[in-house]
Length: 225
Image 1: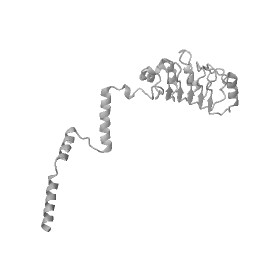
Image 2: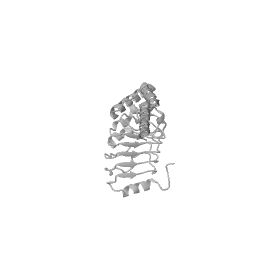
Image 3: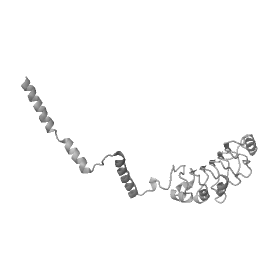
Image 4: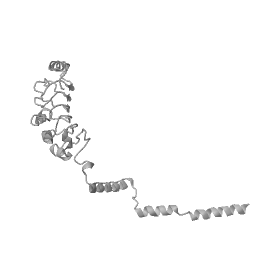
């Protein structure tokens, strides 16, 4: 699944050798390797985005210090099949400024292996699409990695305080507060049911004054003739 005649270790090293040391993006997708111990990334100190999708990665062990890295893509790998091996705790020192981590389709079935990610203060988005951990209550993910605001994937953008987790009474209270807030901000009045009925009755009554005034006008016309 992860190996191809085109994407070999020899080609991987040749590809990295041709990349300038100030490269901002490195794409290693489909090159076969299980961790980063033999991948020569040390000289790419200005790297912002590293993509290693569908490589057969089982661990981030050996990832060198990449202080400028903000995006790490590890989709379609094997990080969740051996819960003791991902070594996510290494990311705190290797990628201290990481903001987005994609882990879609990695066989992740427990939020426990994600707990080391809490040591990445800038991390705000983790993609867990196509992992069974998406069936875990969102608040458990929030408790494990509290600074992450978005868990993108087949569960959509969610957070611990999503509407789906609010009780009916809480939603009712929130909607009532929204109505009051809207009335204040728009400088309008919210009408009660009695007010609405009164307005409806008034609108349905014929305008007697207007009718009388019209009759007077007709009389005036007749007299002029």
